[in-house]
Length: 406
Image (cartoon, rainbow, N blue to C red):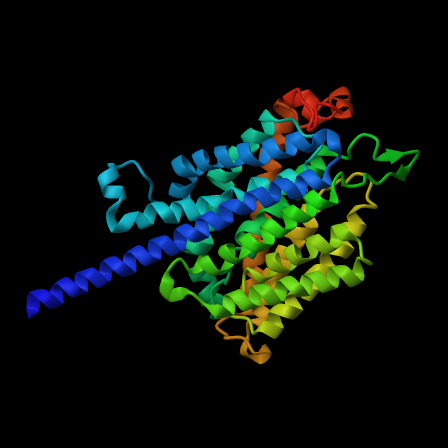
C-alpha cells in the first residue's frame, strides 16, 4: 500500500503544480492583452497624425521591457535570473518561467503608462532608452522592496506601525510608479505646439472615441487577470478580489459619468481609475469599501484631468498622472482605510504603513524620473523638432500615415 500512497502524493503534487502554473499563465496572457488596451486607448485619444506612433510605441516598449527585465530587472527585484540550463528552468512545470512572464507584463505597463502622457511630441529612441533604464533599475528596485522584502523596507515599516505596506496588485508598485514617472517626463517635455495660442489653451479633440472605448474595454477585462491572478496560486483565488474589482470599476464609471457630465472620454477612463485604486486592497476590502474607493477615484481623475488641462506648461495627453499617479496613490491610502475591520475589511493593514509606502513609491518615481529624463534631455533631447511635431510622429518617425490614402 505504501508505494501506492507515495505515488498518489506525487501525482497530487504534479496536479497542484501544474494548476498553479496554468493559472498564472492565464493571468499573464490577460495582462499581456491589456497592452492592446493601452495601445487603442492612446490611438483613440491622440490626433490622427500620431496614431501609428501610438501603436508602435506600445509594442516596442513591451519588447525592450522584456529584454531589460529578463537580463537585469528580475535579478534586481528577486535576486534570481535565467543564466542556467533549460532543464533547470522547467523544474516544477516551469512555474518560475511563467512567474517571470506574469511579472514582466506588469513591468512593461510602466512604459505603456508613460507613453500616454508624452504622446505626440516625444522622440523615439531616447525615450526607448529611458524605458530600458526604468524597467531595468527604477521599477524593480521598488518592486523588490515591496514584493520581495529587499533592503528590509517592509520589516522596518512593520516594526514601526505593526503592519507591512500592503499592495496586493500594484496600485503603488505599478500604477503610481508609472504615473509619477510620467509626471516628470510631461513636465520636462512641455506643452504640445499649438496648444497655447495668444495666452489661451486650445483643446485637441480625440481622434476616435470608438478606438478610445475599445482600449478602455480591453484594459477593463484584462484587469481581472491583473488583480485576481496576483494571488499567483490556485489556492489563493479569491472571489472577493474579483467582486471588489468589479465594484471599484462601476464606482469609477458612475463618478466619471456624473462629475464628467456625460463626456465619453471621462466615462471610459472612469472604470480604469477605479481599477487602478482598488489594486492595493482588492484582497482585503469589503465590496462597499471597494465601491467607495472607485467612486472617489473616478471623481478624482475627472477633477485632476480638468485641472491639468488648464495648465499651460503641463500637457498630459491621456491624463496618465491623474489616472495612474494620483488614483494609484489614493489606492495605496484607501487600503489603509477601507481595508480595516472598522469599514468591514479583513484588517491586517495600517493607514500609517500605507502612507509610508505610498510616499516611498512616489518619491522613488520622482527621483528616478528626474535623473533619467534629466540626463537624456541634456544629452540626447526629449522632443521632436517643431517641424516634425507639426507633420506628426507618424510621418516624422515612421514615414507612413495611419490611413495612407487620406
